[in-house]
Image 1 (cartoon, rainbow, N blue to C red):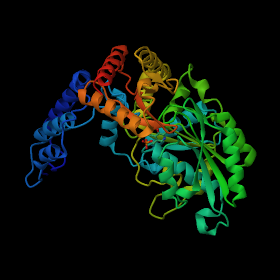
Image 2 (cartoon, rainbow, N blue to C red):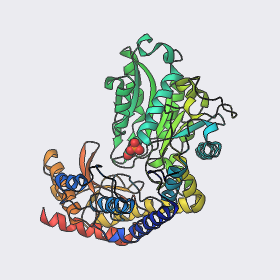
Image 3 (cartoon, rainbow, N blue to C red):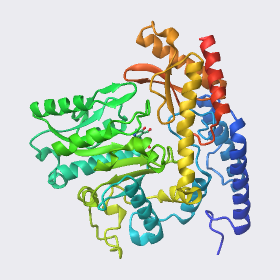
Image 4 (cartoon, rainbow, N blue to C red):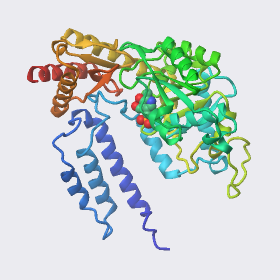
Length: 478
Ligand SMILES: Cc1ncc(COP(=O)(O)O)c(C=O)c1O
């Protein structure tokens, strides 16, 4: 038989794997010396390089590998760089990279147990491991998702199915009142998208004030908002607390919000996309006190757990709620030997990638202690960065939480909000253009700030010093 065009012969395969491993290995060694990003790149320049591929003729696989690697190296933001103080994207763990290679090669369909018993059971074990670590009841279950956004979508889906048992059949229009959900002013934008996707609409999302730049959702304001909504003829069904806000790393008062939900019979969801990973840390787990009351919760392994993207985890306190939201029984899928273990009957996806393997292999190789040390170091480096910035004349506004520092220049306090926002954007741009560090500007509690987050397990004190010096230079120029 001729060699299939999609599968080179063994000698070529080995040569390709060897070369790919050389390139990836060198990348891990050399990346800290690269620019975090080349900001002189234009879309035309990138497109010109890609335009060379017109697929009219086949090319040697070696050439495709070399050119693709060079394109990815030259034309992207290197989140694996220790000077990347960015938006929660980690340096991927090396075991995670290896796992993704295995996943692509085996290509298991994780929708149904019978397709890959080992794969489904590995994910089951991991999901239960985290459910227990969070203190969820024995009825808890969950699944891996593409990321936090899909996991939040799943959570609201599950909350609706749980709180409105007729919904799956009759739809939202059969309800006599408008269901409304409550999130904090600082909650992630994915929840707005969720409301749009599920037909609730943005009007169904009520944003509760936070207590300040160093504190989370105000429980008194939540109670007031719930009462007001009821008085307005609306039907509150869900409260989402955030464990580690995107802007400032703040954890909402989980215990208090959870207690309000219990008392008022509301679904309590915790978005722990960033901060949920603290559950592995003996030192910081206490910050998540109250998370055990969650009816559902999410975390992203592709944030503080350093998995390659995307790797979200959705957990619900009761597996039956997942089935209520998603169960179907099409004739074309063979029945499973393992009752209740088919992911496609408990989640929205059918064809499903083996997302959990990268976390499984990372955690298995590092051990819980190794992961905890990595997390602790990132959080502590955030605290140290906060101190260094204060010493250099900046003002830290969020107490440097969970590895994340929001800071201001007191010298520009007198300027109006718009001017300050432009000033901080200019500072961030100047730093990023230098190529040694990457930070961004944002707003927390309506206040323009600079934001730097320790997202790489390779970041060390020397990188903090470099960032502080990059910022000093930017402040002198702008
Ligand atoms: C608090 C929070 N929730 C949800 C998300 C969405 O996660 P993802 O980007 O994996 O979809 C993020 C992303 O940063 C986040 O910070």
